[in-house]
Structure formats: structure tokens, C-alpha cells
Length: 130
Image: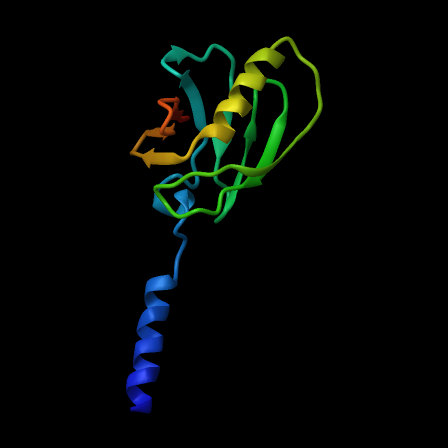
């Protein structure tokens, strides 16, 4: 009976190993550039990346940022976002970017496209930067 318990514990351990966040499902090691926000072309430059399990970082139109994203794929939840505080002409675009990023709840990652969306119909489309 003891062996069955040890075997089951080891088997469950195999299923819980690995990165279950977006970074573990193809988004890591890529700089994702925002091209579309809620159906409109995003004119400013914003870049999102997933440097390690559970972390996000990037460059918004004016400031760099970092935070957490720890929910399992395909869910998305940007939390604890820390942002530098530099002014620039694109502060309005930056506010729109952060508002949308924090509203996203679902993710879909492809070879060169990352989609973030929510149940309210909001959508962010990112392209992999070469």
C-alpha cells in the first residue's frame, strides 16, 4: 500500500512541474509589440515580454514597467505593475495601454501573434518583434 501512495505522489508531481503561465506556452523569449488595441491601430510603441515564469515586463509608450502574471494559461492577469514615472508626449496612449493590459483576462499565443482579450470584448493584438 505504501508503494502505491509513493507512486501516486510521484506521478502527481510530474503533472504539476513546469511553467503553466503564458511564458510556458510560447510567449517567453519574445518581445511582443502592440499593434492593435480594441480594433484600432495602436500608433505609439508598447512592448510586452515574459522574462521568466510569472513575470511580465516591458516598455510602454513613455515608461518601463514590470509586474506579475501567475494565472495558468489561457488565463491572463497582470498584477502588481510597477511603472517608472517619466513624462512624454504619449502619456495618453500609455494610460490606454495600461488600462487595457490590466483589463485583459484571456490569452492566446501563436507563432508570431499574441492576443489578449476579456469577456467585455476588449482586445489587444501583439506581434513578435524580429
